[in-house]
Image 1 (tube, rainbow, N blue to C red):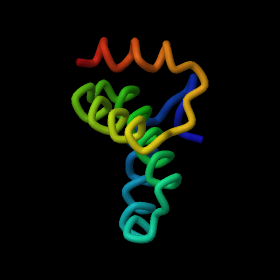
Image 2: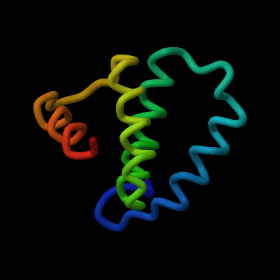
Image 3: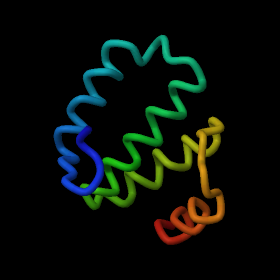
Length: 80
């Protein structure tokens, strides 16, 4: 709800931190992938490009559901 056209990345990151603190030790691989993909998007919106790159690399490695792999690969290359 905090990502998109009217993004509020600070709120998204705060909520994700709470989720990670409460449930992170019990995340399944799929949940880890989704978490890192969302946090990467929030970090992109905040212009934390190094943090976004880290999260998106982890999401990719964990098998995140990526609709457009070519576009995702281009984004990673741009962040690198």
